[in-house]
Image 1 (cartoon, rainbow, N blue to C red):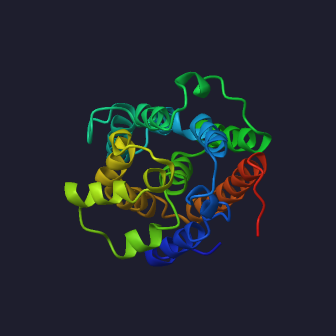
Image 2 (image 1 turned 120 degrees about the horizontal axis):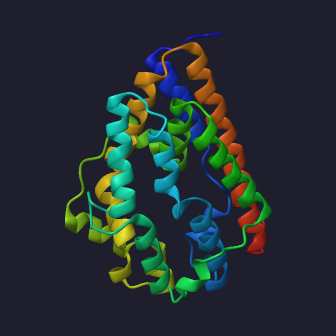
Length: 248
């Protein structure tokens, strides 16, 4: 089994994240998607991972990884569950505030019935966070779930910390504001992400690259991130189908 250098291992991870893209995203970030389609999309996202993401992270912390890792995870959990490093409200609460701004009711996000592909993805995340080695679970949650197709740019060409004015400009350009009339008042989740996420990206990769050093660990991380991508693409396919969208 081949052992990768740090640079080779990072490239393996980034090449997977390069594929975290889905054809339906142009619909959900455009002007033609309806409020009902947005409702389906956001309810599934909330129930699958937004609502319980701090709990998923806490399961990994509870596996008693090295002290440095516990500190990284504890900071992430603290921000997700309290907003203590940004705006003082948990990210799930900020997500729901954004939903209220779109005109949805809070009750619509209780007892969400998961689509079959959503259920499979959530059950897989539960299995990973509960049963797998901490470094595999941490990689899936902090690199894949929290990451995006933009990871390569951020990791290889780190962005500077954004000023409040720059963040407000990005909020005003957000598709929900531009196309769906969402008041920027309800966009604190986006503000919080811009305040903390670039740092989260770098600490996530540092954590995994530093501690997954044995060939077996490296290959396990790569294999599980590939599996995460498969489940995520199926999850996104299911939402697109439920919204009546078809690939061009």
